[in-house]
Length: 340
Ligand SMILES: NC(=O)c1ccc[n+]([C@@H]2O[C@H](COP(=O)([O-])OP(=O)(O)OC[C@H]3O[C@@H](n4cnc5c(N)ncnc54)[C@H](OP(=O)(O)O)[C@@H]3O)[C@@H](O)[C@H]2O)c1
Image 1 (cartoon, rainbow, N blue to C red):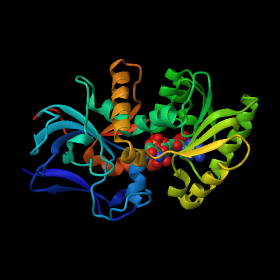
Image 2: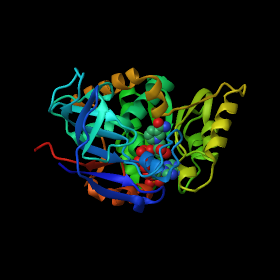
Image 3: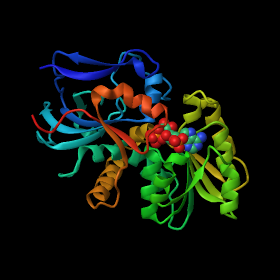
Image 4: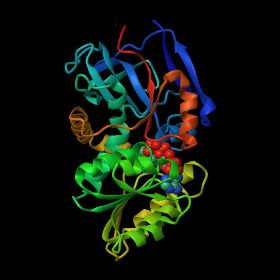
């Protein structure tokens, strides 16, 4: 039986993504499970990987991208014990999920509670786990603290807002004006970073400063985020949006600066969060945190903001929309239906 998958043919723009057809389904090896993928997503992280600008991934094109997936167990390899055919599962694949079928070792799969929409469930795997681990494991946010979220209308931004609301945080979020109604609805004070200086605005809104800033913009932006912290506050850096989009900043220099600022005797600190690195070191944390997020989704305490549901074959358009920052929340790519 043949199946479709997307390939990054060379590093570059959205046009390097091609849908191809392979003649034969992959066979699960020992300890592996073959998953029929129902949903994956298009995110800025996939854009970085497609451009060859994602620290830590050394794979060269051609390869199949796709950082997250929800699917159905399709075939069990020898020696597997944890899953049954037909069971719904999720995984942080990092690469490989833009495909109708994928084999993974069974320890990488997390069960998805019955009845959840695969499109909503897949939003939790990368974007919400990132938000959750930064809030709970890195910043250890406490009720009543003030947080500033940059890119608050994006996939991670909207996840941070929903989880921040549950934690009872006082929230501020930078976003372009078109996303302000959403940021406000999710409980934060929106700041129009395009037309105003967020540092001045934060100073006018809070006398003592911010407890935690979440910044994936990078370059000089990190310094400005550091400046709005109160004594004892923390900058959680987690991306390099500007460097990837050719808007300034250097990834190695940014890393060095973050470490240097940690040594300053001003009571402020920095941390860099990477879901990929933490996943390698602490897969049990990932499984536990994703399980907790599935519970919150079952209880309807969170509701992923889905900007669009598109077929996998529209992957080029999906990546174009992400790069033009045209979407609020997340783009889900529908891969297969549950039937058949
Ligand atoms: N370290 C990790 O483990 C990890 C995990 C997931 C994601 N990330 C990173 O986190 C970032 C966000 O990911 P995402 O999936 O949420 O992306 P996304 O959905 O594309 O959202 C990012 C949004 O940031 C906004 N933005 C751009 N420049 C800005 C600026 N100067 N100030 C404030 N907002 C700005 C844009 O919207 P508007 O301009 O319209 O407001 C853009 O849509 C990316 O850099 C991604 O690589 C890191």
